[in-house]
Each structure stands twice: as C-alpha cells, then as structure tokens.
Length: 281
Length: 285
Image (cartoon, rainbow over all chains, first blue to last red; front, side, top):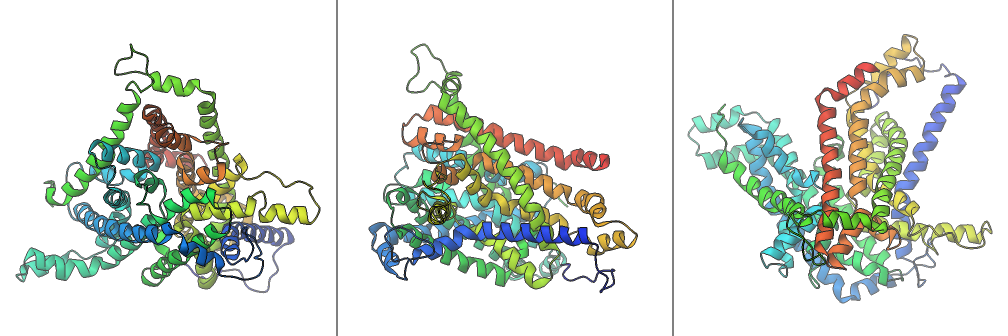
C-alpha cells in the first residue's frame, strides 16, 4: 500500500494555473465515471420502491408492493433455492479441484506444468457462450439434458476452478515450506501434516476463492442459461428470461434482492481478505 | 524437487478440464464442419457449408461487424474512463481509495442481468433520461436508445470498465509515489512526468486491460441479449438463437468456431505481449 506517502513538494506553494485546471479536469472525469458506474444500480434500487405501475426513478411514493409481488411469483423462491444449492455445491467442488491443482503447481516442478495450468484456466480463455454450448452438448450426448441441477453444479464448478486455483495458489506460494517438512520429520502422517499444518496457512486463499466462486455462480447467466431446464433455473437466469414479459417494477425488486445478497458477499470479502485481492496481478 | 508428474494432484482438474471443456469445445468445432439438418444430400463430413451459409446471410455478416465495431468502441471508452479512474484511485489516501475501489469492484461482482436491467430503466422508452428530456421540453418524442448499438456499448462499457481499472491499477501499485515527486523536484513538468514516467510504467497494465476488455466485449452475452434485443444481434446472441430458437446446432457451432478464433487471437496476442513483445514496445518509447 502506498497510501498518503509524503510528497517532496513543500506545502503552500501554489501550482501553476494549467496544472490546477488539469487536476480539476481529472477530478471532473472521475466524478462523471463514478456517476456512470453507480447510476444503473441506484436507479434500480430506487425504482424497486416505487408505488407506480412501471419502474420510475425517482420513485413515485414509497411502497414495498413490488417486493411482495416478486416473492409471490411461483418461480421466485424456487429459482432462489436452486441458485443457493447450485452455488454451494459448485463452490465445494471447485475448491477441492482448485486445491489439488494449486498444490501441484505450487509444490511440484514437472514436465507439462505449463500445459496443465493452461488447461486449468481454459474456462477463462474460451468464450463463456462456447463453454456453455459445449457443456450443453455434453449433457445431451450423455442423455443428461434433463438433470439440470446436476449440470448447473458441474458447469459452475468447472468454470470457477480458475478463481479458486489462483487464490489458493497465491496463498500457498507465500507459505513457508519448511514447516511441512518439520511436521513430517517429527512423525506427522501426510494427512495430519496437510490437515494441521498446510490447511491453516492456505485457509485465507480457500476462503477468498470460495467467496469469489460462490458469487460468480450466483450471478452468472451465460453458462446457466444453456444448462437450465424449464423448471430448474438459477435466479439470475430466470430473471433474464422473465424480464421482457414483466413491464412492471417487479424485476427492479428482484434485482435489488440480488444486489443485497451480492453486497453481503462483497462485505465478507472486504472484511476477510480486503478488496485489494482484485487489484493484484 | 522431483520432476515426476504429481498425478494424484493434477489428474482431477486435468481430466475435468479435458473432458468437460477442451474436448467438448473441439466437439463444437467438429460439429461446425459436420453437415447440418438443412444440408444438401451430397455433403460429406468435413464441410465448410455451415460457415459458408452463415456468412451468406446478411444478418450474420452484420452481426460479426457489429460485434467487432462495438468491441472497439467499448475498448476505447474503457481506456478513456479507466485511465483517469485508476490514476486517481492510486493517488488517494486510505479512505477515499477504499471507497472508490468499492465503487469499481461491487458492480464487477454483480450479475450482468441486474446491470442491464438498470440500464433499461435509465435508457428505456419511458426511462429516466427520456422522462427528464421530455419533461423539460427539450425533445417532443422520446429518443430510441434501448435496443440500439448505443445501448449495447453503454452496457458493455459498464460491464467491462472494472477490468480495465483493475488491470491499470495493478501496475500503478508497484510504482513508488516518490518517483514522480522526484521527477518533479528535478524540474520535470507534470505532463512530462505523466508521459515519460507514469505512462511507460503502466503500459503493461493498459495492454492487459485492452486485450481483456476487447476479448470480453466480443464474447459478452447477457448484456447484448438484454440491451440489444432481437433488432441488434451480435455473434453471441445469434449463437444462442440458433441453438435454442431455430435448433440449428450446426450453425450455432459455426458461430462458436468464429468466437473461438476471436478468443484464440486474444491469447496469442497476450502471450506475445508477455514475451518480449512488450519490452520491445517499451524500448521504442
């Protein structure tokens, strides 16, 4: 962190006018883009509390009717449950896969490590629509196209492996390998060494990876839309297909609920590992 | 250390990626050269017919050019917006730094559907911009902004701007703040500092961000689906429509093949940049 590093320029000396104007220009641009980033979110939250028929911002009056309406849709609770089950199971699988892959890459040098890494991050390299379509074809070939829950779990586990692997790898790379050898030489079994020595020090990486994987799965639509069935859909995918038939403000209410849940994940990331994980190379 | 392949650790991910991503994607490529349901009787296995027929349709050609054109706009705007944002964030003290970082990262985690819906409310026929402009008497008729290329550019820029900011920020972090203070105290003017010190130092982040934003813009799906509607199809939304509306999987696969080529171009460029390509650029500066 390089916060508030002292500058060498003495205070009190006024900068020349063009420089001050330039700074003002940069500030104006930053304000403009911050408004751009926040506008659709603020408008959605505002519109979800409107008492008018269509989404209005600023909201007309203040009412919770669109939240009540949203909860009454038969698909709302069903798809929310699907989303939570899919995200939990996919995250668990993704962490287990990511842990093994990260361990291999952080602790072993082997022929083909580069190819292995490329394969592990292939879901990031290949366009998501193509991955979604390809996974849909696999399900079709295996005759499993109606097992949507299973397909969604496996699909999301696969596409989140790059995230879990990377964050676990980062925490493994910074770990002192000597303590593992020490534990082994003191007679700990490989399992005990892993569970009591390795795990505690890679736990932050696992937590980070797990939250990112969960959030990704909960919010993804590209892969989810290809693997969802008629009744088993994630909330985001269901919202996407219902949206155009809902001219009222209920999609705004559902969007606000998704935003609220995402905000919880966001705060957990901020409080546990800090937002700087995203600004790292 | 042992050079033996740690099979127990690599096999699970290796097999999963091979079986569920790599081989199925090759399967999509195979499917794209297999005669489709509307094939002529004489067509045999390796055929260019699917590619030829999608390029014969004006709608697909338009979708391809629209995809590339929109991606260029989104990338240019992301650079224009991302650079001042990243630059400004990097120079703030702890509090504002965290606030601005949160502003950039929170939408980054949020579903593309929710964000596209927000833009629908902002840009729609009876959205807030039209209401305000019509209410103020600036325009008589509401502007058509939704389901246009403009709406897709706005939506994708909103979707991808965080990638650009974070990519530039990750290189700015490594720069000692005293570097530009030192340059200034030696008599360098701030613009000189910017062009000769900060810009070259952040060039790797800028290039990574540019490649990332461009490739993600060409392959974005939910945003153009919701903001472009059926009137303004892109490659990805056409793929979806061929797969699930007209059930012409051979054509869907051919579009998938084109998207794979666009994606592969990004990876190759990125490798080239990482491997001295960039150093060469830096040396010329």
